[in-house]
Length: 335
Ligand code: AHM
Ligand code: MG
Picture (spheres, rainbow, N blue to C red):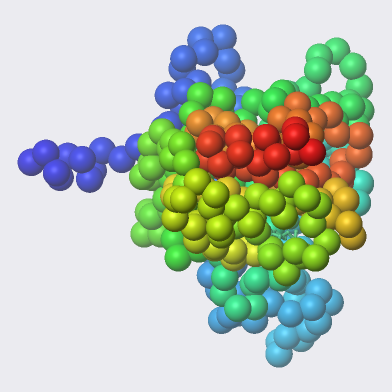
């Protein structure tokens, strides 16, 4: 029966990555191993997030629970999980996490050729009310033949070899690009495996949704103000766009990727560089958008061309459907 065959012949993320790898005959499997460790970290965090209410994992770091054990905040716990998973993969060299002020340089005997930048649990202010949150990551390849330095991670986003996110929502979804399109995998909790459910994701060329924190309107610059005004009162007589804003980047970007539209976190008078971080928020999401046929812009340039100077640097960001980002690009270029 064809339908049964389909259900039992599952494309798991492991199988997908091994397939990809076999296209590069000289590869030694390092990338598959690294990715497996990232996936394991995501499964761990997914299970911790799902149990958060029950296990009272939430709460302030350092608080003790009824058993007198120290509790860890979920974002602290997630960070530890990813650092351990990445170091133990034996394939990493430098790790940059949103949770840690300093980059982690892996000890020489555990080193590999990849650098991983990540936000272990983005949107953590949403945990207590059950809104979707996620892990975001990007992977660079080390330059050869020298001791690792911060310069190895201060590379433009276009140099990433892979990027993705895992969303802990109504279902747990892992969205990945290794530089040849974007694929989405859904965790089957009964199998503990991510299954390819969204092959070759392409973002609609133009969307009907804009996504921004409008509470910041009073501090916006002209191009952002004009753009959002035009979403509500389109000059060409088309229907106004809908506003959707979750306030959790992974969820807002995930919706943008699937339904189309634009996500904006502009700079403003109070925070000229906006809020989102270049290395582990702006770059991975921009990488995915471009790979899905969309665009990503900082207000000045293509986001992936930006060369970061500091590991926790921020940048304004406008990403999503090709035509929608094109519109805001023109407003900024004219300004
Ligand atoms: P966080 O790293 O402190 O969780 O903040 C990042 C989050 C993003 O997920 C989201 O896009 C943004 O902050 C929302 O910011 P705001 O509340 O200013 O709209
Ligand atoms: Mg974050």
